[in-house]
Amino acid sequence: MKTLSFILLPILFFSCGNSTGSTSNEQEVLSALGAGVPECILSYQTKYDQLLPLEVIKKHYNVPAQAKKKYDFSPQAKRHDSDTYEYNWPSDRIQKMKVMEQEIKIPMPNRIALQWIGSNLFMITGKATPLESFKAFYRNASAAEKEAALKKAGEVLKEKGYDEKTTKTATDMAKDLSTDTIIFKDISGVGEAASWRIKDKYLTVLVGKITFQIAADVGTNDEENVALAKKLALEVLNKCK
Image 1 (spheres, rainbow, N blue to C red):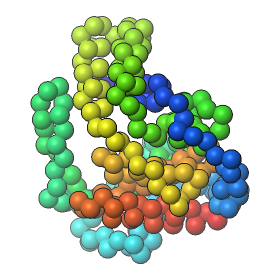
Image 2: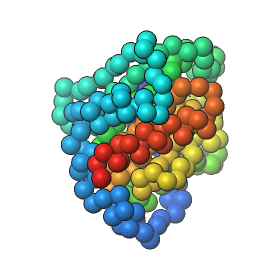
Image 3: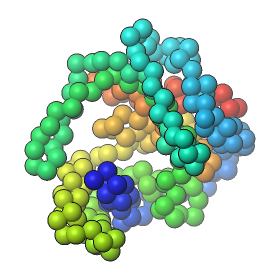
Image 4: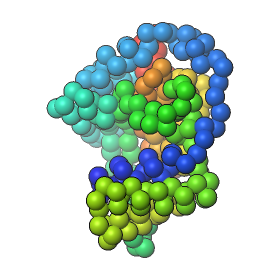
């Protein structure tokens, strides 16, 4: 079912819409960051913990002593753009999710992470520039777009040989995942563009043709989570200036 989610979600959220707009100063923004920044960030693909070490995180957040370090590192070089390096510790928060008409409660630990360095998944939208593709990918789809995308997703699954029962199960899951009207929030002042995924508490930052993500889920105040993620993202960028 996890594999089906990877097939469904890009179709569901991003294949039916147009870009929310392009920019004429894309090169100027990248120049201000530094032309070598994307390559520098990529050089840390196997060293996430050196790009954002704990002492730098502690400049902006008092990570408690009981926090556990976790580094999910792929043995395959081509998969390092989905590695995750994080610190997590317990909280009293839970997240409610509705899956297959049933509500489940999931414990939500406090979490600060650097992840997905070098990911260019957003380029599947096929726009003229990376910035336009990013804007088209990280956007909030309308109800009509979601309905059309769900129909297309079902067709894609059938074309890939999934039986009717599996296809229905997967599309029902996608319906549950797509119930939120506002999924992404544009964030200014970091990278060429940045988008906050509201429910999952991570900031995706565009630099050149790649992205990286900063997760910050340390409380119920989302403005504070965003502010922390933005500060840590700027630390990553400043390391490569």
